[in-house]
Amino acid sequence: MEYAGIAIIPLLIGILEVFKKIGLNERYIPIFSVILGIGLGIALFSDGDFLAGIIQGIFIGLSAVGLYSGTKNTVQKH
Image 1: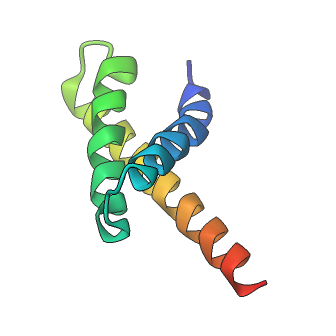
Image 2 (image 1 turned 120 degrees about the horizontal axis):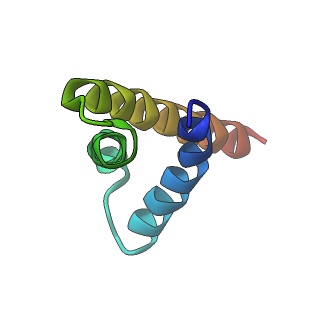
């Protein structure tokens, strides 16, 4: 389950895209990404250690928003 967090990142990006399509303002995407990441981290990776789940979730959320932002900026520039 060590690399499962990497597989969760594209899923989280897809969820963020759905939120954007239903009308969520883009400036709130990073906040939702971290919140959802923390929720997923606790649910999937805590294994009884709540703090470890939160930290893993923060990494997932920030990675997803960075990938989302980087891809968006690259596509918009071309």
